[in-house]
Image 1 (spheres, helix red, strand yellow):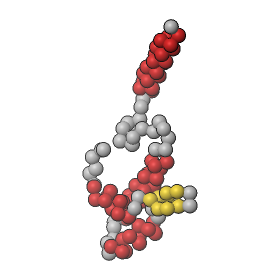
Image 2 (spheres, rainbow, N blue to C red; image 1 turned 120 degrees about the vertical axis):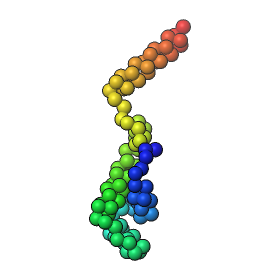
Image 3 (tube, rainbow, N blue to C red; image 1 turned 90 degrees about the horizontal axis):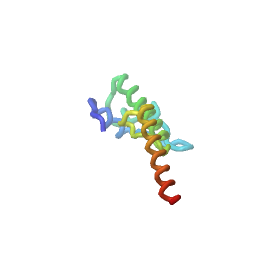
Image 4 (tube, one colour; image 1 turned 90 degrees about the vertical axis):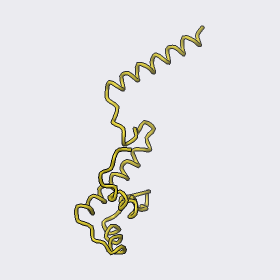
Length: 105
């Protein structure tokens, strides 16, 4: 996992809950829920922290949807480059050719 310079923000997000239940599945945590969480704990977050919690929740839900795809890379890995895709394509082609040649004899 990548290093986190503000782990307390992630702790807050997990305490609030990174998502809420929606009619069609998880949805980002609402502003109302973040406000209610603050009131219950008796804390007042700075506006930038509140916006960050909401943004992290939006990204959490978006990444959860992307992660359903079979070829989705892990979020902490860089996306494959065209060079990587070409190299992988050549390897797969060569492997299939080798299999085809070995089964035809």
